[in-house]
Picture 1 (cartoon, rainbow, N blue to C red):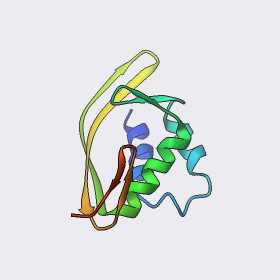
Picture 2 (cartoon, rainbow, N blue to C red):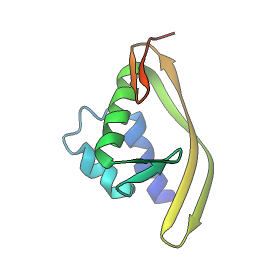
Picture 3 (spheres, helix red, strand yellow):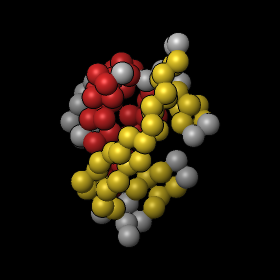
Picture 4 (tube, one colour):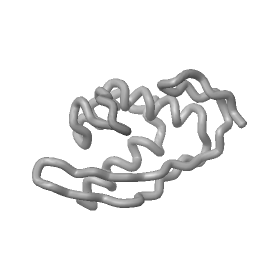
Length: 98
């Protein structure tokens, strides 16, 4: 599971816009669709969310809270932190920097 986490974290914290294969990279570590806070999210949407986060926040980092592995499923609970410096295009609308 450690190898999976090591592949997953950079997808969120390192610039996705510089990667032509962002959707392929997300598809290597996420199911399509994947449940995020109870909602089904596609690989395309995940890559877009990562791109939006990276454009709106500086010094993005993640803290892993917990991991659970069962046959056919791995769940990773994490918190992301960063400095909000530009408008964030969230699934609920645009959030101005604070």
